[in-house]
Image (cartoon, rainbow, N blue to C red; front, side, top):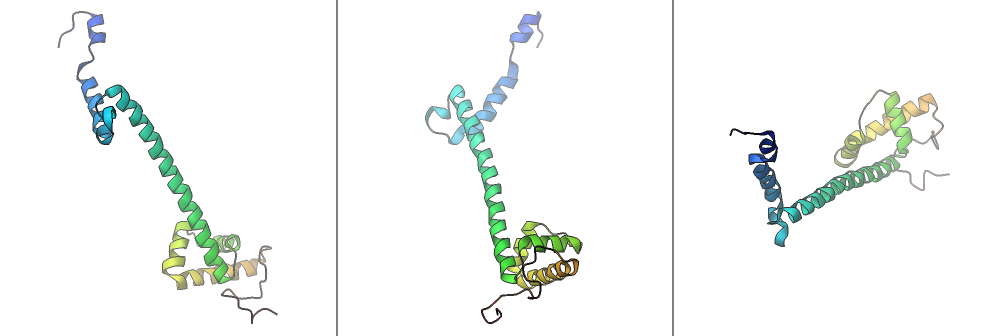
Length: 148
């Protein structure tokens, strides 16, 4: 296409506008009423939908993080060690595992998690961490008969 002046060139929107609108209309195809047909309404609803999806992803991450925290606290409590002590003991033993892996081990491989808890407990006892409540008790489930 040949433009005879700069003003005609700047006024021509060309095929880009068609494809830009088409991209929005494809995403807005499942919207109701004029939100799927009218571009000015579709673009507003599209931006709103993108905000909701971003918030949903952030909320999902936060909820998963909270769930991992609760599961790890429960699993560590079951082994007789708190999570901070276990995390510090594993770090000092140069065992680097993240929270998600620890949660998966606690759920699906409890023996492996128990052995990791024993390693962390032993290292914490060896280094004399202050956060250990009763270092003479071995990790495991504490029953009433064990208490004096």
